[in-house]
Image (cartoon, rainbow, N blue to C red; front, side):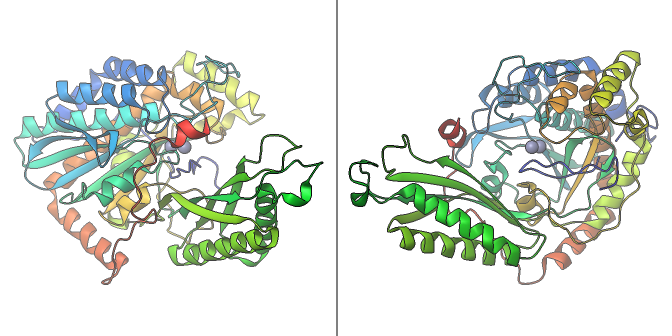
Length: 487
Ligand SMILES: [Zn+2]
Ligand SMILES: [Zn+2]
């Protein structure tokens, strides 16, 4: 991939990445949003660091979600919390009439990625959680943008609604999918999304659709030395299954991704395991291909169970659509991103960033990426990559995703470097840029309804006449304990 055009690999995914302090648009009340952000750096610096210091895993983000809800409530939004079966999901609404603009806000952390705000690896808590995907910054930037938009709506007296979607458990839990399935996005005209990145740009990639499936094998326990003939090993089932999948992967479309971890392989070598479990992520840029892959992998599981005289059952833990692009919205956000510009480090931030770059054995010239805005890339077919629950949103509401420079260029997704930068003022500068892009984009959409209608027409055309939304996670309830079980 091109340097600086970042594609984040969460299960999440997304984005390329920009902003700065220049270029406020003039016009009826428009300065209200920019001026609000100009004077609110300290507010959002504290808020993002509060979440960064309280890293909570998917569906367990009680405090993190609470911090964002509290600030929105204090800022005049109507907050509804505990939605679609998820205690930490919320919506926060301000304004009246159309268009209704939705903004996505994530706030979950990752296990085992605790990291201090220093340019070398040092955990705050050894083995603890950390914001290595920058969702502390993500949630805070989205909220800052929404509150700035509220300032403009109030100052201009313009019709329009802004709605923040607090979406839990992006890292594998798929909170957005349940919110979509519940119909919470009904009536929303456009969704604006962003993700912390190593540069500044608008995302044009579709990523991959994914199904996350747990396969559980059951056998018969026996003394592994005394009476192995009486046993049937569930672990044998898992191993035979994985072997078959590793053979079939040569014969699937090259953009497919199949990966697994054995989450339970038995307890002791001298006991034939009667229970074993393997977790798979199966991905393809196209849902139709994914469906075939999932069938094939399922047949391998059944074959493995037969051959080892065990039994197998499967559970879809989560599933996301690939992302549906919207060119009209991408062009609209690109214009605002270019007005906002990139991030400018001060001396202290530069020294921090340079230490990270040197630690990665990269050239210091890579730091230019944080100051510049990537040109809008051409759309091209996805060749693989990560997945995000934004995908399901994008097939239900015209959606656009962008990124700003929160992380130091060259840093990998889900790395300690990201947790370090995201928790510093570098992270705050990136999120304030994102907030400005949100505000300028919303003002553009509120004052130019033609853009909204064209984005919608494009959305309908891309989706196709016969499109019917069927969630890839079926009718299951949110896996509220998916992090509790694993960690
Ligand atoms: Zn992630
Ligand atoms: Zn992420």
